[in-house]
Amino acid sequence: MTRAQHAVKGEARPRRLAPVITARTVAKRCTATARSGERCKSAPLHGKKLCALHTPGTASILGQRGGRRRAVFNPDGLEPFPPPKDVNDLLRLVMQTVVEVRSAKIDTKTATAIFYGCGVGRSILETADLDARIKILEERHESAERERARVN
Image 1 (cartoon, rainbow, N blue to C red):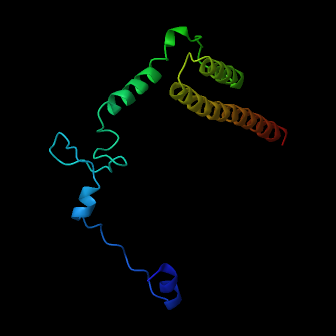
Image 2: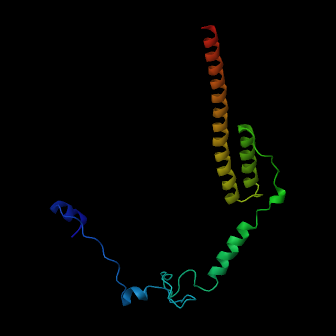
């Protein structure tokens, strides 16, 4: 029965059982074995017996791509920044990071971490600013209360 037929009858849809591994499903798996001796559970490439990672040469090509991508980052060429003290310092850091990403001096993963840190820093700076303003208002209120008590 389909989902619509169950809905019309007002019945709950039956739960699916765990897939049964048959000879046919085993045949649709990669023929390579892992170091543990277990068979690979990935599907093979179309018309082949091995999956993408077990096809000879594919894993090394993928490793080289990852290695080249990570080799771009060198912190020596980056502009040093003092710790940001206000929103303008954070803005300068963000804009400089964008420039460094575009000129391939820094990788995007590191830039993402910097942007995340700038977001956290901004919220901390806002909270610190609000705390300082509240402290000033409380001091004014206390001095006004003392003045009223003195006058009365």
